[in-house]
Length: 270
Image (cartoon, rainbow, N blue to C red; front, side, top):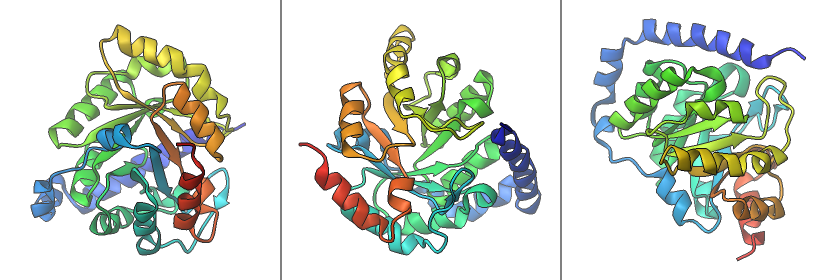
């Protein structure tokens, strides 16, 4: 099957180059103004303190499922997620493949008082600055898109800007990307090349993730991403050591994602 990730990254390079040409970094930072002075929320702390650990995602479409909720609006969903008990929200900002935008992130920041994750394919320092200016509290760094050195550089910059980092891996071989500037370590249960989803991937990697973290004298909070559709799976993942659970499609494919999240959290065992 064709590696979709290659197409996404090729498109992302073009997208970021155009953004840099349209708004130079110094202009972006000047436009950021007081936003850069905002005290960020800790996503790691929020997940660690939460009984549910749900990171509720705002996503209109995906390459694997097509349109989930094409008319989804930030003002209708992000406040509802917060009210329902989300520990954090993930906002897709990729336009072509996920139907998102930086405007979505900026709008979400005005409406939410919980941590916001900028979820995108971050390959350039410019995108980290964008995330801070537009209101993110954390950024996603995908191991499959980066070399270990690139991951370290981007994570260091994120911490300089008071942003937390979620490193996403899909296989044991990508644990080499783990570094001291990673706050959360996530397993994507969806293969970014084929988009095949298997939640058992988190269980297969849980022990080795904890072993490697201990060997490196690090303690990132563990997050399971994608393919989670029932509360029983969350309970099993928690027993395996995970404290964050990124869920998008399960909520976004319904008419009222906030209500669906509320019912989901209500069904979680105490």
